[in-house]
View 1: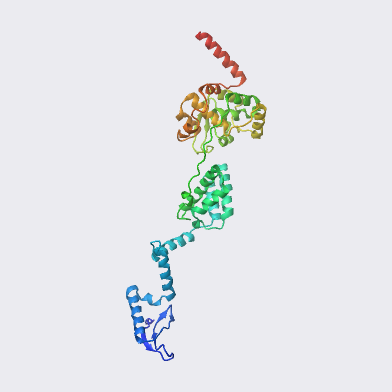
View 2: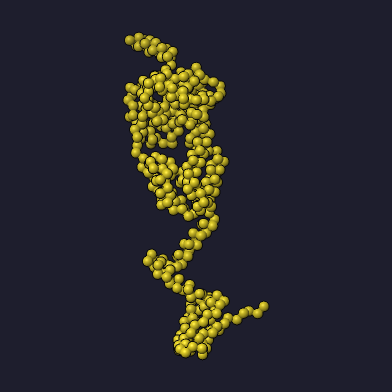
Amino acid sequence: MRRRRTPKLAVVPYRHHPNLKWTISGYYVNGKRVRHFFKTRHEADTFIRQLQIKVENLGERALHIDPRVHYMAIDAQDKLAAFGKTIADAAEHYTKHLQNVERSCTVNQLVAEFIETKQSEGRQKTTIYELNWRLGRFAQKFGQRVVATFNSAECDDWLRKEAPTPRNRVNARRVLHALFAYAVMRNYCPENPISRIPKPKVPDKPIDVFTPAELQRLFEAANPAIIPHIAIGAFAGLRRAELSRLDWKEVHLDRNFIEVTALKSKTASRRLVPTQPNLKAWLTPYAKKAGRVETPNHRKSLEAAQQRAGLERWPRNGLRHSFASYHLAKFQDSSALALQLGHTTTGLLFAHYREVVTPEDAEAYWQIMPAHERKIHSRTMAYAATVNN
């Protein structure tokens, strides 16, 4: 096949206009002939020389660029110059953006894939529930948006609207950060827009605990079926979710510890919580070989016990916070307490539980026992006092 020859530029006379006497032959742009007319041959020769300079500088493609592109390039360069950028910078930036969008996905697709991944990792039901709830609201607003098109400002606006309180926004930000971190890992977006959103500062609230007298009244007013729940929460400090999943086969009274398995722990790590003498005394009459420690309708039973005990309030995480506060005051061993609580460091202990209760109250707290055990303990203490005298 014979190669098509490139048209040769030439100045030729033009006889169909009273003033424009010259034109250019062989000038094509994108395969279409372009006509230019000039008053003098000198103007026509100058125009051809300018085209030849372009060819020398930029190659033969310069002849085939639409003149409108030249004007766009000049206008674009003027706009970019104010920011110290060039057309090449703009082209590279926008090309990367288009590539990111092309390999990205919608929010609906990302949320579904992310939650499915967490389920396959064996995350707790409560975690999956929170992901479905919080990310469901995000998908309801932005479901069809391409993930790579988000910026920090609009994510921040959504967080402030959907989670107006600092504590709620901290939790919502945590979930959204995990979602976009997964998107970055899967190359659905180039960066995590949530990383630039500062964490809200949540004012510290003082720890609220049960007094020894309140806890004693609660035991006395409680339905026997929920006494193990109260005792383990108050004297072993298990988290609410850990208590709800605890089985009697994990309560080893003969070996003086409660096992919190990795599957049932919030931190997905196994730990052994020692059973103090008063905890063992409370659990022994109710111990079973197997079966859930928490009974059905335990919440209603707890509320009924609270009313009968005359307690006007139930402290937030009251049983666990009471355990930590009285344990630290009594035993003065922050490292051991951190292990029992499932903390990785002792920082939280000193920030929240130090000097919350007095040593005298701590002593009374760890002497809370069933009625029959109190009688035995009282007789033992009386006998010991007699011997010492």
